[in-house]
Image 1 (cartoon, rainbow, N blue to C red):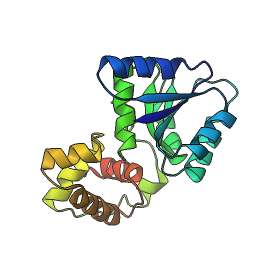
Image 2 (tube, rainbow, N blue to C red; image 1 turned 90 degrees about the vertical axis):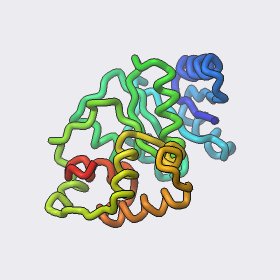
Image 3 (cartoon, helix red, strand yellow; image 1 turned 120 degrees about the horizontal axis):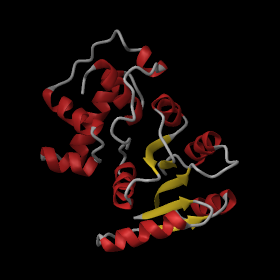
Length: 209
């Protein structure tokens, strides 16, 4: 798995590679000290599975950066590294395009797991980081709507909300990737949302998972 690590001193990239090696995993962390370098790598290397942004970089408009990356490179999910994660800010980061949020103090093995989850199309949030009382326009639009799921769709949604990647859902439920994708499409239609982030937010507010 190739990971683009946008951090000024390449420290995170080095730490991730060392941890991956210790765990016997194949991870190539490509460092980018500046945005120009990061964009050049993304333009040239189509094998990059996901990007990691050090949210502690001073003077960087992380929200604008997330939106720009989501617009120009929609197939490259982004994980944001933060010194702390405030519940009130989680929805904003997700709305701007983040597919995962991790704490800088998290063990590097956990950050690797987060990267694999988002690379497989999932969403990663640390436990307790999502406040059910946060007002969300996506959720507010459907808060009076009671979705109807099949038992299997509920199982898929539950695993999705736990942060499991598509491959893990397939293994846990004994289903093919195509079948899981069909269930996800049906879940999105039922919740009237467009992606996994919105589905998890809506389902948690509605008590569907």
